Amino acid sequence: MKKVNKSRYAILGMLFDQPLSGYELRKRMLSSTTYFWNETDASVYPMLRILEEEGMVTAKTEFVGKRARKVFTITQAGKDDVTAWLALPAEQEHPRSELLLKLFFGAFVCKEITIKQLEQRLQQCQETQKTFKTIENEIAQAPDTHPQKLFWELSVRRGTIDVEATITWLNECLERLKRNNEKKIQN
Image 1 (spheres, rainbow, N blue to C red):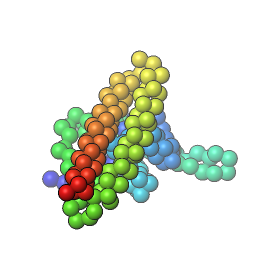
Image 2 (image 1 turned 120 degrees about the horizontal axis):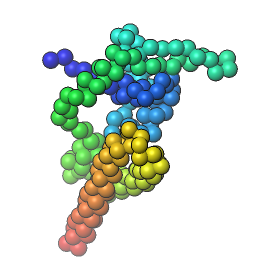
Image 3 (image 1 turned 30 degrees about the vertical axis):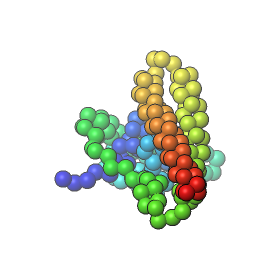
């Protein structure tokens, strides 16, 4: 079975509500889906060209002052494609975590290195947790009649639960590593 590049659906989904330029699309992704689905400029712009060639989007050049920009609009074929994909079961995910890989091989370096990496990740997660609170507050401002509000709430809730669980796990790891270090010093 041919592997489908799921970037197409992230982009079509973003265009479902309104036409966007490539820049606006990336900006919107960075403030929403980046926490669970990351797209780079290197993937967005080529995919927009492919979607245009396939007839899933149309592009119109607009001028802002003297500067030209392409604005993309999803076609009915694009809407049909993304809604058909939405109805399919999600594939099993196989996450990759460099931190877990380093932790797995942690016996090959001194514990202080691992502790420092875990502390750095803890700080990052705490910042992400603050960001999710901000996003939750922004979503709460949307009218209850907005068709996407419930789905945004559900998505950000998953992120909040994940980051809270990761913070708990990181604290446990740090506690155990530090306690283990203290035992070795005492012996």
